[in-house]
Image 1 (cartoon, rainbow, N blue to C red):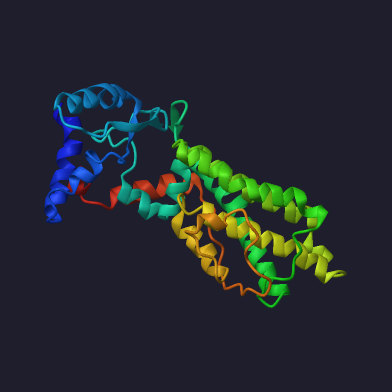
Image 2: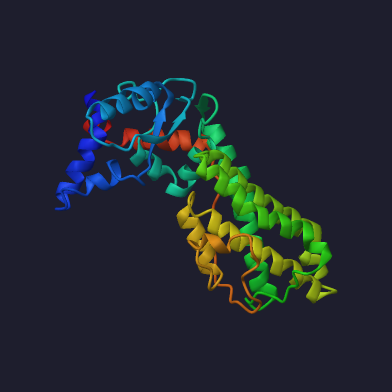
Length: 309
């Protein structure tokens, strides 16, 4: 009982520290308030039965859980997480191994939304190398670097009325809604998969149009495909924001005038010809499961025992 009521009391304590003691009511007693609970499946009864029962028993109006987003279990290389047995990985260790965006991508894309999951370093390597780096990072880098190299760092002229572009433009238009639907249902893994699928479509489009080859004989045709690719990338920068904000901002800053938080622009061709493309280094690098295992042991061996407790 005390555990679940702690959510209310913690909000009250937060409001008092802000010297606005009644602010907690905005979240727990306001008609329009919606509280969402992200939990593991073992806590479902506490959040769907016990907490609502306790709130209802007060006789006052409380906002009951509006949505309970539960996940299945995750294991660490075939074993249950255990602090005492040092099975698993601490956040400070994770950040020392790789940047936050790598972990955000891997853990969201592996989120056990439908079944239990076993985390392994090999699966982490696969997610980062073949998806984050080879799909998303590759599409961003090849598009931006080609524009900078062959079109004087300016978005080339493009035409959205060409019948030959109908397929890719239709995919672009549908993408934000596909991501949005998953986010509204709190299916974060599925939402991120939709972002990655748009990057895959961008890579397929570039491979089909081959602007690096066409440029030698028809610069306008090469510019057309690069102009459309920039539109795809600009939308990726927007819909990627909830998942990998730092990477999304890097892409946005490389395309002058793109505001990453303006969701309404996603799916449209809004980057004008002539827009300057800034410098951008490769967004991601590949990782090695073998090296990560070695490095985590080195990190732990170099720390005093009290820091590992």
